[in-house]
Image (cartoon, rainbow, N blue to C red; front, side):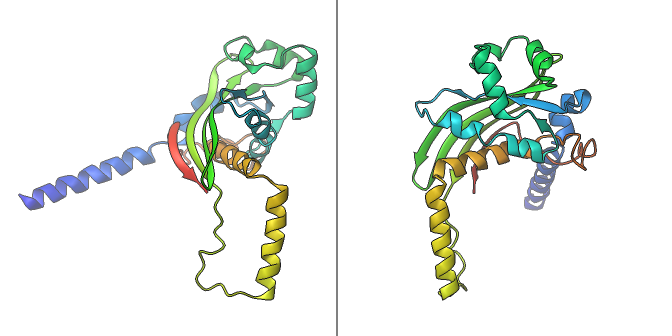
Length: 229
C-alpha cells in the first residue's frame, strides 16, 4: 500500500510539472503572434496609490525592456507633449475606449497601459502590485496582460560571498557602489526591476532575432506573486 501511495504521489508531481511546462508565450499571448505589433506607444501609468512619485518612476523605465524585446517604442517625451496638447494625458480615458487616434497620429500598432495598485517601501525593498496590459490600436483587443504582486528586494549581496577578502580594491569598489546608490534612489532601481520582470515573458518583436520563434518558450502565470532581486 505504501508503495502504491509513493507511485501515485510521483505521478501527481510529474503531472503538475507537465502542466506548468505547458505554459508558453504562445499559449499565454496568442494575439501577440496573430497581430504582430511593431510600434508601441506607452501611456502614463494609472496610479491608484498615495505615492505620487510612483507614476513618473515607472513611466521613465518602461521603454527599455520593450525595446530590448524587439519593439519600436515611440519616445515617451514626444508622447507626453502631444497627449498634453490634446488634453489626453489621463490614461484612464482610453482604457476601454477606441485607440484609433493613437494609430492615426502616432502610427502605433498597440498601446501599453499600466496600473499601480501598491507601491511602498518595506524594510529592504519595495512592495508593489502592478498590472500591465497591451491593447491593439487596430482591434482594441488585449494582446498582453500581466498582474504581479512583487516584493522588489533591494538588499545588497556583497556580503554573501564567504571567500571575499577585504582589500584596497574592494574598498574602492564599495565606495563607487555607494556613490552610484546615492545618485540612484531605491525607487528607481525598484521600478526598473519591476518593468524588466513583468515584460520578461513578452513575445519578442520584429527587431529581435527571436521574432516569431519563441512561441514555445516557457512563460510564467499571468497573475503572480514573487520576490524579485
